[in-house]
Image (cartoon, rainbow, N blue to C red; front, top):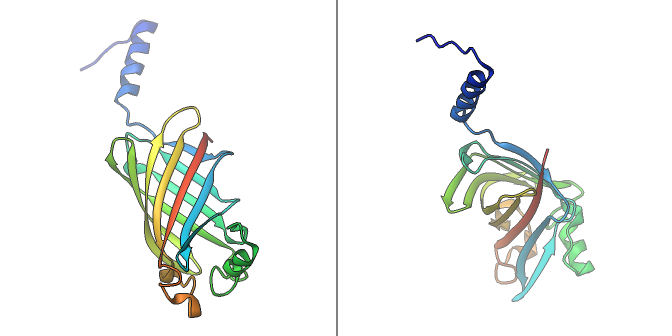
Length: 188
């Protein structure tokens, strides 16, 4: 079949038709101000929370094609803050994050799953203290001029050697640590 495009309107219509048939492309985002990364656990039955200021997020995502998504989060561990200076210095020490040897953690994921509505799951890998283990981040996507990714994950600290030795007792500190994040994004 040979189609002649003789008018500018015919050319524009043909181009519009080709673009509509093209697969959606993932948008590339970087973290914007207003983002937060929080952890929560217990010590002797008392819940405490902390944050990781300075974390950085890079995201490639199209909610219509989540399987093409990519996420890369870098977390500087020395900045962990829990509101208690003694606890913060303990977290930075050899028994916990060992920031002298392992300055940062990193979470990466490629290919997300839609789990209903505007919710998705990223089956990724957390690298912490020289150990890499799978961790699933479930998140809600709120589109807009500055989209927001709001997510949750559970990390088993002992899988990464966090809180070993005298701190390995899960009656004192549970193995599971809740992670939550709100990442405000802007297009790259």
